[in-house]
Length: 409
Image 1: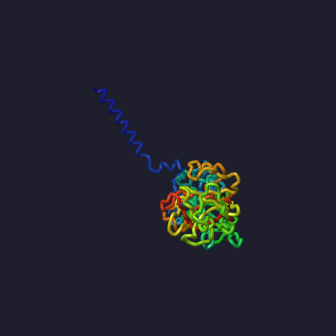
Image 2: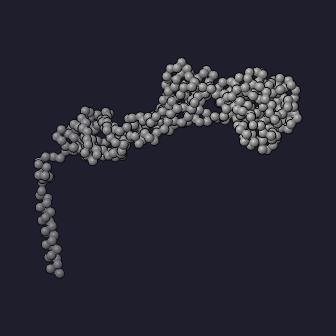
Image 3: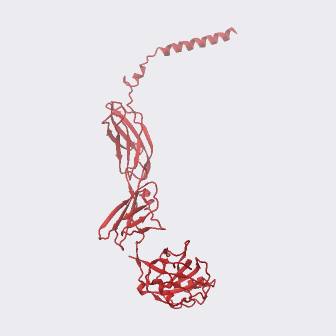
């Protein structure tokens, strides 16, 4: 037992001796490793902001208050490339900026050190995920889309309103180039917050071009244009068809008229507003609805676009009717009755085009306009199939006037 205690005592004495020796070292002995000089770290860069660009980017930060800092060095490409900036200010309200150019489209890491006059450097500040954009990003950009359902509106003051869909959130602008009515090349800008813009005047038949620009980030230093401008849908003006050329052209299966004064030609006699008997078209009542009436417009229209229909001042006004068109009726007459369920299919089989089926929710008196299908085939002959009238009559139909418009450049 005594032997064991003696061994522990020896160990304890040795430990105390070594500790005493270590405590005798001086606090300045590290200078032996630094050539008797103190180790100094200049103030490090903090709060770096990345501003992406096209084949380049900008780095920015506020200078620190360390008055000994004389320069900054920014490294990238695994420290193989660098740029040196003078520390012109030590006021934190100022900003240090550097634009680094000639970069490939890529995500980079940058390393920034502050240096003092003696060459001492700060702790390294690392900036990761610094994005540079280029050709690949540009290929993903598209011009804003016109509103396909209603691309433009022709205004009474001869201006044209262009309609666009809402853009992507990073859209900056869309430049629109067109020729005005005087033949002068003109430009206007469509802001991202707007979906419409007005051409104060426009020379019909000339193209309207539009090109959008974007930024990949709200902090970007460059704006990116799409690869090329697009052409806006062709803008046509509506020109009223010449009623002086219209002629009656009764086809097999058409309804008769009540009397000669109420013939089909009443529909283009130039009357304004709902008319009373006998200044109207009046069917003879000899057929059950649906009934048909036909006429020749006197010339072929390539882009028939709109019809306006005016009812009688009191009775039997259509509230559901079809308008059909064809350029030549040769061999195009269906033998089927207008009441036959196969009439519509046979009309189409013989080359007729259904330009529109018009529905009215009122009493059918006032003028009402109806648009035809987009891009219709050439049309000269019109056939109207009246399916229902407001009065509920099953064998009579009245109308006062029909007016047609075609699209022309």
